[in-house]
Length: 74
Image 1 (cartoon, rainbow, N blue to C red):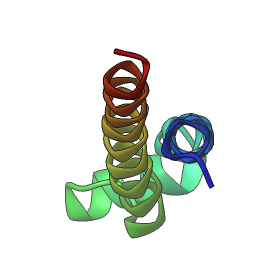
Image 2: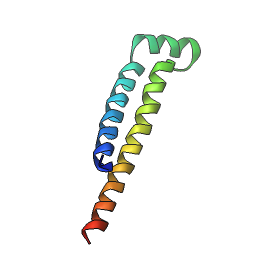
Image 3: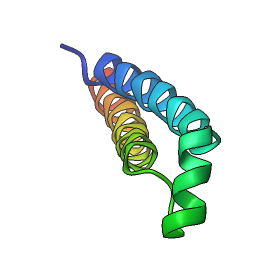
Image 4: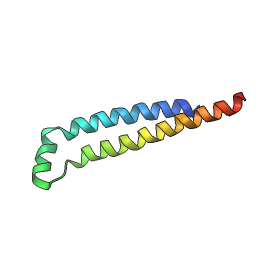
């Protein structure tokens, strides 16, 4: 599988998880947890963390794929 395609898939998946994480962060359960414990829910933090990592990996794979395509074309 082409690393650029895998990168695009990772970037899209990471973006989706980030959106879900931000929605979880603004949920009622997260607000209650924030008031009681001073932190948002663990679930929202997992979504945000994994989404951010996937997005960074996706960007790295896209640039890696472009670099290797440029080297082959020269």
